[in-house]
Image (cartoon, rainbow, N blue to C red; front, side):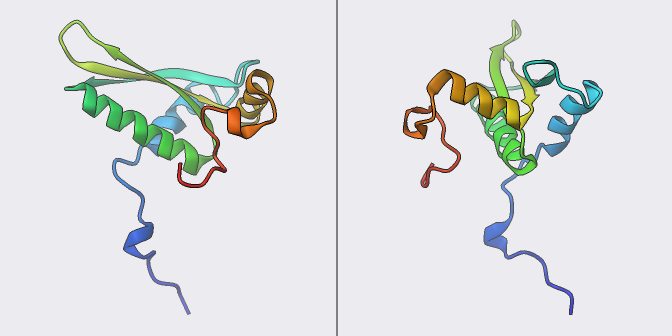
Length: 118
């Protein structure tokens, strides 16, 4: 018997930006550099800093679902709009970087994906 749709409480929060992260990987030809970085892209035209923050959070949610790491930066343009510069990163390289910089104690990491109540 087929399963029904997922319950509403499990639905992903909008906006879902999976295609933006796929674009980062695709534009790099599916091959990351020696640091694990794929192509750097820009989501431009955010009318406020709050909207840019919302896009940044949506990118991180999508990265979590696609099992990639992510690096972002919010940039203010001369016309008063904001852009979000982002780069998808190979998950294995991202974890290796965190271990090299912060050590194996996850409580000292700025972000621990296994921590409850993030």
